[in-house]
Image (cartoon, rainbow, N blue to C red; front, side):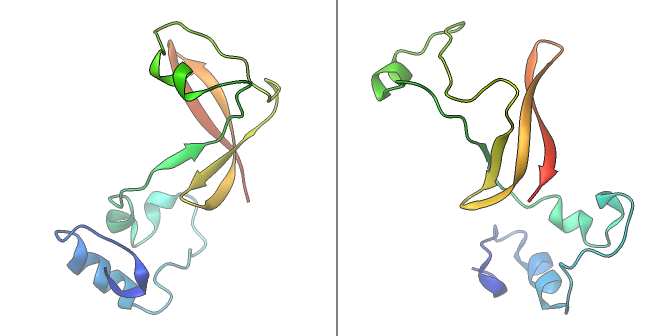
Amino acid sequence: MADGGLMTRSSEAPEMKALLSTPNALVMPSIARIEEHPSWSVLARLPVTLTAGILLSRFKVRDLLNLREGQVFGSRSRDTEDVPLRVGQVQLGWSEFEVVEQRLSLRLTRLV
């Protein structure tokens, strides 16, 4: 575990340790694009899992185990409703699903 309680892979640890040891290193300066941030080269490689929460009606483990291509399940959310976007237990914002070139995509609509 690196300084600050963040877990990193051993190959990233020296860079992450240097980043975390710099005062206010993770405070976002006023920039037009995130890629312009001085720490972007390190931050862009941090592995995180994003989760979009959708409430399914009457979905059971049995349904998950028997899931087949093309199968459809009803949701308790309206199709116009944004869904929460999380990293671990932290909600980052709200998002919506969209189909782009026959692929399901997730668009960030607002930050928390």
